Image 1 (cartoon, rainbow, N blue to C red):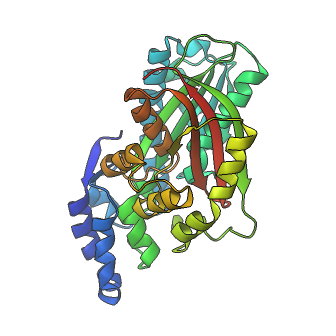
Image 2: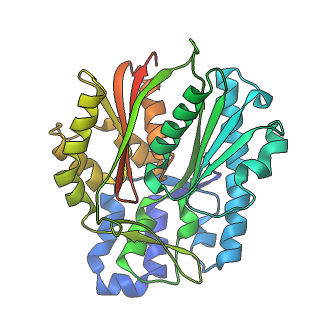
Length: 336
């Protein structure tokens, strides 16, 4: 996690000042900070910085600095837990959609982290909230392609840097109530008897003509959020079919579900779509409460929490993102 903790009440107070005109037009927007199911989040910059306007250059500088630091910390922690030295990593997959860095983050931190010059670098941009699941799926495929090689997947999103005090839309207010920063990393290797889980089948489903549900719009100041109010209803009405097809094709028997907690309403919609008792997705709600929606890494935070609680057996890991796309992985969890 980055160093600056954002208390939801403090963010709400700041938002009332920054988006005063929007709150005057839509006074019920204040309820989103209470109903989001979030108590705290984290950011690479303090709340005072986020409340002021910044241009592309300032946002990019903050992104590169914050993401590079998190990359090293998160990758080192994952490699240490796996008992693998950075010099033994063969492939690095970097997933991030909240900033632009060329050279990529993995190139910028390679020397500090201890990666060898011959490491293969695979940067992935544009997957948004689905990036944790799609990045893990890509890493698993790369590991299977070269059995024995070590694949490091690092997923970083700095969503708070997208805050836009220069704009006064409902979407900007809602994003200020939902999004936080965070990073997660996974080490993968085929033909290994060690590990916490085994990746099985992977799949994704993109619904046609849904480009306007979620994503970024680029303007002269920076990225700005595109978030349709129809998202929860869409999930409730359309998610069940691809989930069930994946479970059937992967031949899973009564798998547990780990999903990306996009927000409290989205979690309610997933439970309704899959005919789960309300409150079933408790790990998702706990991560949302204490970290907010960090976009791509969030589902990996949920997986880690579930493993710590003793998760075992077949699992479906799912995340929704721009496209509009659902990503699925089948996991076999070994121990918590």
